Length: 57
Image (cartoon, rainbow, N blue to C red):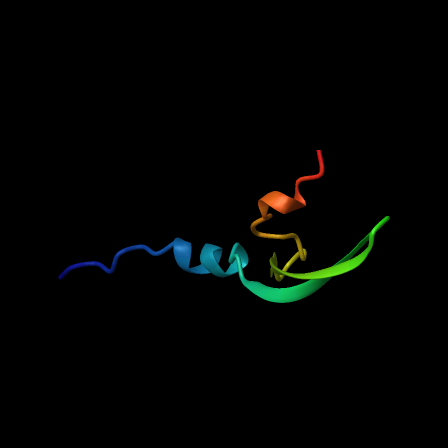
């Protein structure tokens, strides 16, 4: 008789899932307001990928 493999990842996977969605983000500066689309995380709304144009350093 064989034993079933232990699957500790099953619960951890749902707790740490990186679910994302695409939304519109408006940004206002001295030149006016622009709107762009960004992919954000469902849990904290932080962007998953920032484009090169977003770096303001």
